[in-house]
Amino acid sequence: MPETESSTLELDTVFALLSESRRRYLLYHFLENDVGNVENLSARIAAWEADSSVREVDEDDRRGVAVSLIHNHMPRLADHDVLEYDDRNGDAVTTPTFEKLRPFLEQARAQEGTSTVPDRSQLSVLYSTPPPEPYPPESGEADGEEPASPEDD
Figure 1: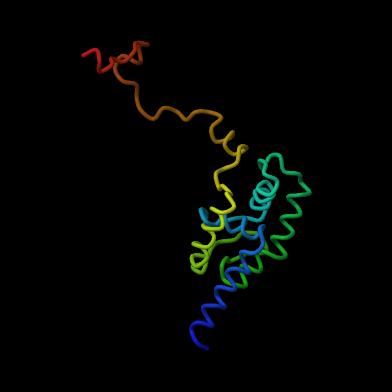
Figure 2: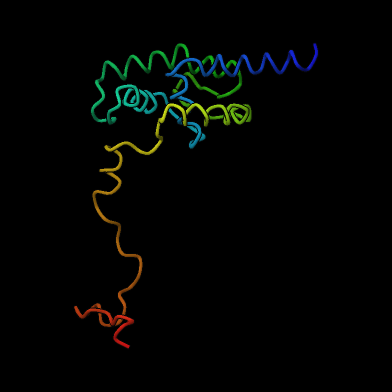
């Protein structure tokens, strides 16, 4: 088979895999993470679809996304060697083939304006308590005094 036919077939496969919005959302996760789990991904994808936070996702919506991931999207991506998917525990990891999709995924994500920033529910947990100060106080700070400013010199 001539190389152009093979390339066309690969390109057709890429676009077929990216034609489903839910599958794109799934793949967007893997742009920044090498691993994922159906339980976590289904909640996140349902939140993306509803344009809400993970906490606001209805359990029925999350379950519907999980079913489609388990029975359609994960196996299809595994069949094309984009992900390795363990259907016993719902874990998935990217394969080297995923990198062939990366430029197309990045373009699709830019067009859709989908962010992979942690949603609000994750941010509230991440930043609810400030981390402990990693540095010892400078001289004078421990006594309640203000540290000398460079202007005082």
